[in-house]
Image (cartoon, rainbow over all chains, first blue to last red; front, side, top):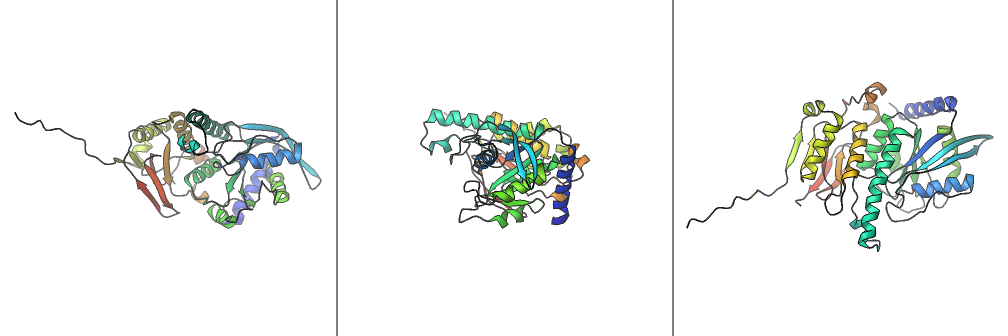
Length: 213
Length: 129
């Protein structure tokens, strides 16, 4: 399947959902730890509701519970779309509490955090299987996107046949390469942004409205 | 007095290669148990054909529930990237039919480290506990 055909199919699926929609769609913000998911969620919810969703941090697994912000109304080109934004813990296949010790945590705190992180990952997977209508997959564009977690999660999302947009975040970093992400997942549309700096957010909101309205 | 000879276990890393046919006969949870039981024992498990997306999702969930500080840190898993074009029809995917399964390597996170991965090569370093 060619790139254009793939994108056209994705848009078609999104359009089907648009016209059959009654309730706001639950859009899950997924991705590996430290990709900037909560920073993006906060950017979206601050821009359209005035409230933030959760604390941001450079420490992995800062988000250890899925959080939902309901009825986020995004206005684009004279129309408005309303979605529920679900911020999810970063998905991984391993959690080692000793990694948290590098961030000046006591051992007890590191163990507690690692336990909560494992529960959070399981929770994120459960949401994806049961309660998510569309996915924004957030990647740190300064890092290599060819990882098993990314490959598996994109495969899991595709198998559920729900619309997905890939966000190449952190374009403000020198090492950022959006093209590397596009090459890795050519079957999906990739949108570049910096959630931290607010770069390219107009295109981000255009695409959210187009795919998930 | 004759000196007793001590029988020592050979050192090394055990690798289990599991055929696609054997996996096909197992239910999803049986596959996940087979994998995780092997990994808990420090083995490297290689699946001739990988898991379906739904099984991969459950494998992540079950792995998370079994992580325990100082005992089990989770798994390292590698397979070749799955492409959309070979992922079968929606019906196939809903039914968990995965003819496209790709060779998959799974091991304890503290014993296997991926050195390089692209669409045609997975290079990993395996160490003893």
